[in-house]
Amino acid sequence: MNLINIKEIKYTQLTGGTSSNIYLLSNIKNESKYIVKFNDPRVLESEAYFLNFYNKVYILPDLLFAEKTFKYIVYPFIPGSTNYVKKNKKELLISLVEQLINNYESYPNTPGWGWTDDLRNSWSDFLMSRMTESYQILDSYLDKPDHTLIFSIINNQITFQGEPYILHGDCGIHNFIFNNGDLRGIIDPTPVFGDPLYDLIYAFCSSPDNLTKETISVAVSHLKNLQNNDSHTLYKNVLVGLYFRLATCIRHHPNDLDEYLIAWNYWTSLVKST
Image 1 (cartoon, helix red, strand yellow):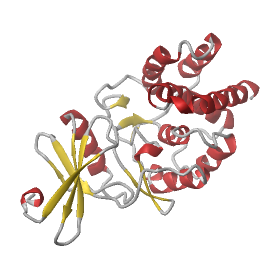
Image 2 (cartoon, rainbow, N blue to C red):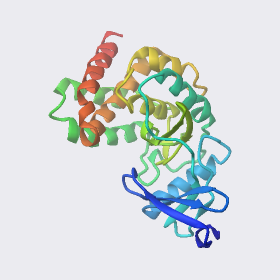
Image 3 (cartoon, one colour):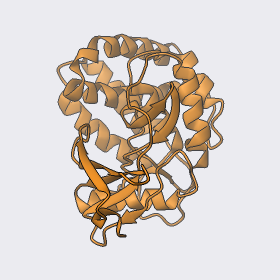
């Protein structure tokens, strides 16, 4: 690929990547724009694999080039912004389902479940590993019965039959590109082998607004690859996702904590009452 070597290119380093260095390359002559992303080669290899696997899903970037040792990858710039306006969450989730999640495919003979660089023996094993990490952060924020409830749900009540699907894995609003309020792109996958519902709940919990059963239920009704449409099972899955999100909130978005704790009380009440 000769893009980086031509004289008409100018580049600007972008902010926003948590562990990566990202540059915007602009071709002065024809006004085309590209993203060059540097990161740990293992991370970029997984991202490149995901983008190649779903290369016909138009909401994802087209992978134009991957350096042979995965020092960097290149894909087209998607016009828009990652600024999420807290409204129309139902419509956003429906769009996510229809444009991305309903295009997910199962992966026969996968070597395991969860993060591609830290595979587990089962879906519940992966969720339990996430709970263990989250517990270290949430221990002093929630009561003991809260932790016990999540442990019980993961250990005894969440299963997934069949082959795992290849998921985005970091499917939150921070990785969504919006243009005029519409979802136009989804970037920065950290692939996971697992249940497609995981990515939908991840997106649902990734902002503290409209965390209601009505919001998630409408989106789930559009989901093609749903194994169990029982509302109580859905509520338990949401509560687990919210538990993980509370830990992320404390680490990265502490100003949102009060809103998330209100949602936590709402969802624990729903699970216990049903």
